[in-house]
Length: 115
Image (cartoon, rainbow, N blue to C red; front, side, top):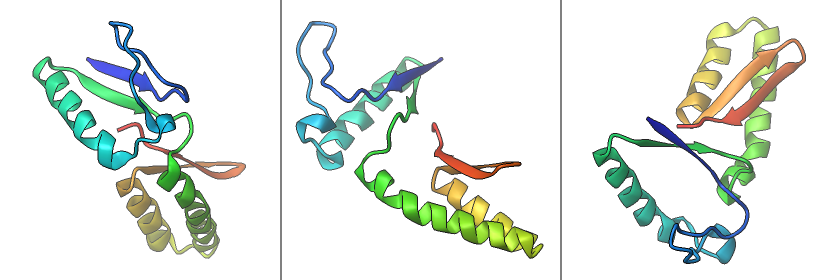
């Protein structure tokens, strides 16, 4: 079973009604990562997984967007030159970084993968 969690912009509440702290409260990955790791381990014991749906990229992911766009533009140029191997290499390396490209008749779009 996979649980899908949306990352809300406000604070969330536990089932006991206690307020929890989130990124919007000033917590960063250094503070949140241990709790997230523990949660994944506990859910794994129950045979559950968390699937993260990204509504808006976090700070470092948002900062990466212009560079991803440059790589997509470069990949498009390579495709026009029929340099398929290099074009595929850019796509594959971005996929390893959880960036999924979607080619369409209108061009190439991208989104973060949902682990």
